[in-house]
Image (cartoon, helix red, strand yellow):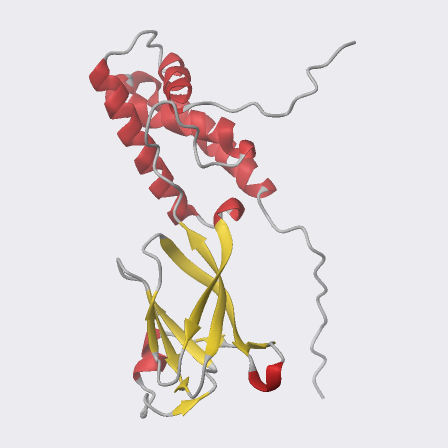
Length: 221
């Protein structure tokens, strides 16, 4: 037997839309329907940001902080910060030191937010322009190294491919078909929603960190 020898299958935005409309029982589309479907696709991407971690959207980022800095603004496509360290360049050796995330109320109750030392805690303000507040404020130059969840990129041109890992293509197609059915094929909405939720659950179960984890009981004294 001869195989293709390739593993590059992907779907352009217009192919995704065509497949989704076919699942809704619609074979031909006009200009407005294409525009409507692309809008639904972008809304679907936003919904995925609310459903949990998408591993392909997790990336490491850095931010240089100088003495006296106690607040920074992150890129606007940052959904959340997962973990972080402070990189200390003292004595010519780069050392990554854990920094703990605290809540808004914990940060609010810190009496002297202007005291300076190596930052040991941070609070993430999840606004349209996300911000990070440090305590204490930096007493010298450091680098804030963090893992962030970024937004899935917009659909853009119909000839683009989606900013989605290949494992999620079936889920993406069924999700778009479900969204489209709400507007054009309501009689199929129930069935398409069930397929979408099943596809999403299957993809989400696979899209996880598979590193080993050890649980040690706390026996107390």
